[in-house]
Length: 375
Image 1 (cartoon, rainbow, N blue to C red):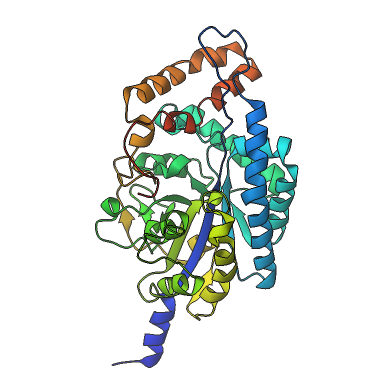
Image 2 (cartoon, one colour; image 1 turned 60 degrees about the vertical axis):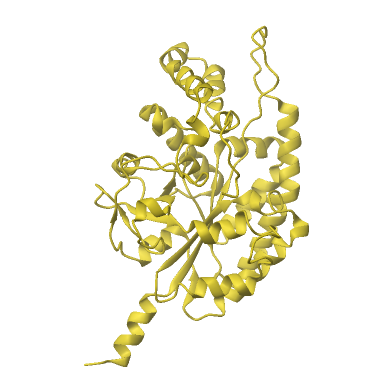
């Protein structure tokens, strides 16, 4: 027997919660270094200071202030999440401490969640599980000391993910969910707009990035050759509303540098994000949730099996951007081959330098494949 109440209730259960998560990262840049060097200073502090201040002024400060004003304007209805690497936090404390203050102000609103990841934005999971767990613990402790939050959701470097990673993260007992790319080949025709469970895990939930909608903002926003250009807040809000009845979540995961650095201010990116929450919240079936609130609000609808490593890079969504050629493979194998020797030295500077050299950007810069970030 048909029930309008039952129909309405079912419909309400399939409202779409928008989950914004921003990756915030800058590597420590290397100085020009040759085989003839005997200096133990590997990093270019002048360049680090210059780039950190530049990105802070173009992206971090204006974006933080804008999002803080939006949170206050909507009285807690607008919520976001950040994953900030330890290597960037160190640089911000040295070169742009005012950015830390704005992140602290965001944390105090109660509408911002900070996620856990590897402190050094490394590929350590692939080469040393002990080192990986040390990076994660260091990052978690740093986030707690700075912002008073103990992260309950984990994202690995560059969203690199497989079943083994999920199992390891669950075994720590510290996390409720893990984040991955919602690549088509792992979903087998299913939608990324639901909460899932990793294969082999009993408690951990899996949040999948809606890469099409995320990349519309992160990569295609200013592309005048794109059929949907210009992207307006009204148009994007309609795309979000189209998920109502067909999914529970729309996970919009992207680099924070999208705002002002990758998409310059004159593209209208700040105006876009400034108007978007209002347009989305106009629809009664839409709201904003942090990743932890998503986990608490929605049950997993199925299991996702990812036996092979995936990432959020390029159309292949694999590891070829970091490990696709002999230079990259040799460099990273040599680096991790030093682990036992490095740790026997018991020198904190040597250990820290070695760990900073693990940052994934080093190997990304050695990439020789033909690709476009937009893909």
